[in-house]
Amino acid sequence: MADELLRNTGTARRRGAEEPIEELELEAAIARNVRELRLQRGLSVADMAGEIGISKAMLSKVENAQTSCSLGTLALLAKGLDVPVTSLFRGADTERPASYVRAGRGTPIVRNGTQAGHEYQLLGALRGEHKRLECLLVTLTGTSETYPLFQHPGTEFIYMLEGTIDYGHGRKVYRLTAGDSLTLDGEGAHGPVELIDVPIRFLSVIAFPDGAV
Image (tube, rainbow, N blue to C red; front, side, top):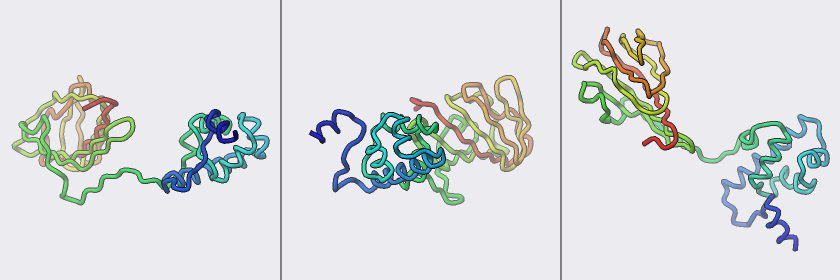
């Protein structure tokens, strides 16, 4: 009967003996964060449970990493503690994606500007839960052509490493030298208007929105 009630309430589930280690680490992080946040507010377990609408026994299990919280329970905890849900996961030692590239080992790729003599090296790309991030090292030389008509979905961040360039975006032109940066809406026409001092090298980081190919 207790097991049936547990299933029907949807607030938690019993942890099996073969639970993946990643889930155990996540439960431990939630337990630690909930307890610390509760103590910061000066609430007892009983007071906190009553305030957010779960049983004292359930909150005790959460704080002792003896149960896996449902999304509904996590939402109640976050609301009662007045923090984002993500704050409850802080410190979880689960694997997260990363992209590591040694100096000079970026992968040469072909982009729209390749025919205009623009050289691109892919320094890393991650496809997260909500968007795709692409990082490029762009090199322009004396044989490169200007091309201020690039357009793509998402937001682009440019950081100048070397040289001087007049870079256009929409109706504006920006003089960029080493150390300068420019963040722009990729839907607006953009790109090099004039190559002032070559060679020119800059980092281009593009965050593509959901659904972008």
